[in-house]
Length: 70
Image (cartoon, rainbow, N blue to C red; front, side, top):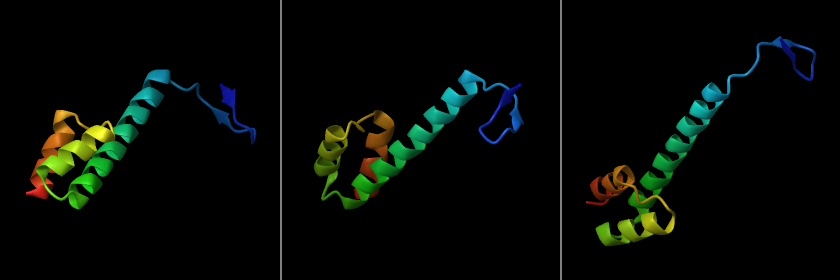
């Protein structure tokens, strides 16, 4: 058992679970960012360029951008 700063007992942290949770949180954040870009883009080319500038130019994010702009 591990102890927190308040003295509570906790089981050991599983690194794989923590990493999976962080990856999931990042995916949600990237999706929200892609939606925000798509909502504010002038057209498809603008959306694609902005997503690329932000490093959000994966196929999944590009699809989000095209569907939201058109």
